[in-house]
Length: 440
Ligand SMILES: Nc1nc2c(ncn2[C@@H]2O[C@H](COP(=O)(O)OP(=O)(O)OP(=O)(O)O)[C@@H](O)[C@H]2O)c(=O)[nH]1
Ligand SMILES: [Mg+2]
Image (cartoon, rainbow, N blue to C red; front, top):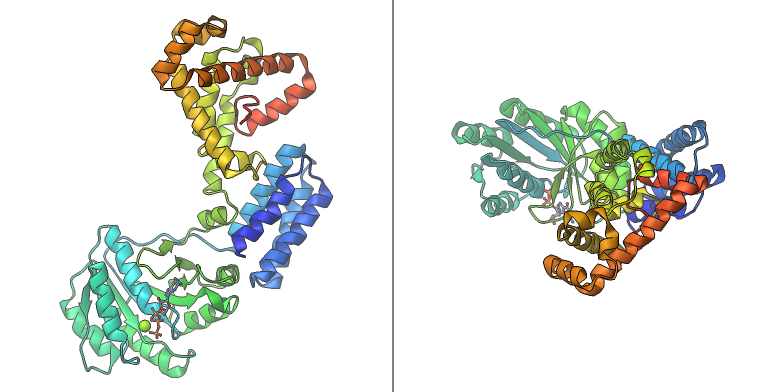
């Protein structure tokens, strides 16, 4: 089972509960510790992270259920982002890159994936094969360069990598130059010397160390050692798709002096991502781009003025405004999980998204007067059939919408009378302004 799935399971235990208290937060932290340690994250780092999460969640005043859940999710997210290191900004100017790493880590494949990446950014790329150690290494890069449409340079029979680079540099005019170097089974004096010679000749702007995720937390130590031998600008962690130890690799590099630049997620040329710890952790937790979502929640809760709603009669028009506010939040699945309903089945989310779209087109087919007074529509066959035709929906669906709307009206009345209920609604609106209890 992968790290993301385990993390989501740990978090969903919390988000599934109607209320969370100190004991729940402690149980979550225990779960997180188990999950991270089993993904080979260093025990010391895990303890540091748990302490921070515990301090930050429990130090704040005890909040009511929903906001505490949000609060905990946000803290877990932020601390995981911290643990997984910084976000990388790729250079998109004319520059030269040296690729280094141990045997079989994915250097040659990564050279080609990088070439593909820079090409998609509109840059021309030249690949230099300077691995004179492995017999078929140069042919492998030659084939890959054809595949991605990059220029290819080497000097057949030349045994000194720095000389290959010298000759190639005299010819190569591409925006981005990438040099593939030879691996070793360990970082020894010979490899250090070879890399330094190549680096002296190439004068790289970027020096990426390629490591496979399956080495787990050893990655941090390896990055530190390489960094001392030939200063690194970043690390490219490959095979994130196949390893349960990815969390260990990323976090240990994050804790070292080096930083992660790219991650490899498969053997295909497109299986490379610029490393963005926020997006990475967001995906792990099942909430893509959680940062942006949090911002949206803030914005929308500012826009939603409960007092105004309280004093006004609920009209379809006002409901429509709510609907638009809810849609602004992005995919409903994300909204649900932010509201603590992470476990809403996919089909239900899809169904409700479909319903929202239908509701929208029905509302667009209504007259101004109807939007202001839903009573005009009640049991009015002519109007209902006109709206059905206009929106491309069935009459049955229009009736269903009207009955949903009626339920909302009732809820609104309850809301005005009942303070406890009102508080609950206010929380819901803050969490995203989902229109009433739009049962799905
Ligand atoms: N699943 C997966 N496989 C990868 C990834 N990156 C590389 N590989 C595979 O790993 C194997 C080794 O890749 P190479 O690019 O040849 O590694 P290298 O570091 O150049 O190897 P040497 O030149 O022999 O030191 C190949 O079978 C690649 O297809 C990745 O991100 N995911
Ligand atoms: Mg190679």
